[in-house]
Amino acid sequence: MLTLWGNLDSGNVYKVRLLWSWLGLAHRRVDVAQTRGEPSTAAFRVLNPIGKVPAVQLEDGRLLAESGAILQFFANGTRYWPDAAWDQAEVLRWMFFEQYSHEPYIAVNRYLLAYAPSRDAFDDERVRRNHPRGVQALAVMEERLGRARWLVGDAPTIADIALYAYTHVAAEGGFSLDGMPGIARWMARLEALPGHIGLLQESAVEVVGFSA
Amino acid sequence: MLTLWGNLDSGNVYKVRLLWSWLGLAHRRVDVAQTRGEPSTAAFRVLNPIGKVPAVQLEDGRLLAESGAILQFFANGTRYWPDAAWDQAEVLRWMFFEQYSHEPYIAVNRYLLAYAPSRDAFDDERVRRNHPRGVQALAVMEERLGRARWLVGDAPTIADIALYAYTHVAAEGGFSLDGMPGIARWMARLEALPGHIGLLQESAVEVVGFSA
Image (cartoon, rainbow over all chains, first blue to last red; front, side):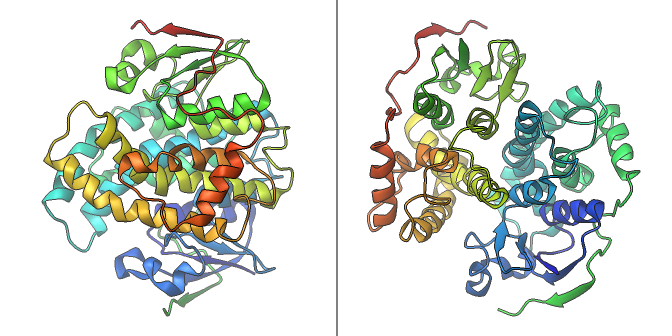
């Protein structure tokens, strides 16, 4: 069975869990949480040298890290990774946009405001400076989703999973989705897909603790 | 002919220029520079709503942004984007690692120390906090390149281009590559490939200014 290292409230871990739920793939989860400092331990860095969740182990023992790479690997050969070269590039465009221009502002502010064990003046200033950049990322999404049902083509892809994960909890980072009807309709559409699970909805067959 | 929007000293723009040089593809370049505030103008956002370079226009008029997506689109069908599903995921793993765990520390410190028009106390603290994270990213690369010739498999891929771009100028961000012989050998190997061009080596058939 597939093994997933990560915590339930992480949007990056949720991306993997949501795709696996869409695909009907069973997994066990090892509960590794940044708030407990576990991803940066030596024991975890054997699995992922960069010290971040999610990390995944296949049944044959191979390990894969980075949510975007995990999504592409499991979507490859399914309807969620399109065949056409241009569509593949567009999917990756949105996924790189998410990791570089969306996650560092929207997910980081959510982490700092709702999950970080402690915050200092630098982090407070960081939250303040991140805010307009997160708003801009949401505006870029609204520009697309105000005139299209899905981010790429006319069907859901892993680009939609990648951007849904932190967008649907943007309020926890102090971001309002009021006045973004395209995003609201897109989220409702995605939530109505067969196999949908919520961020905090456990989907593992078994959950075990992590020991460093 | 392909059109590339971006400045010569940007590592993200260089990734595209280096792949096109490997592939022998001619292009014209529109000189758009962050230091002149051009990517955030309304005129540029028509091309790329997120206001960042590089952006590329194909001969048929289609526009593509995000360096990683551009690399995958042009490498698709060439030796630089492998056929095997596992290798594709590994290439993307390194490319997402670059954008999320390498570029925000190594490239951002290079920008703040060597290119930013002005810097305040927040940015100085940011440079200081970024430093150990950049060092860790280089250690992750060294761990791989101390025992392998290329990041993925046994031949160069777009993962190598993605990580070479800012690693080879890491010193401008205050990062030393001393004591990282695997990275040094890998850089020399990459620089010896046919079609190599330097970061500041103009490769466009024509360069035009940007008018907002």
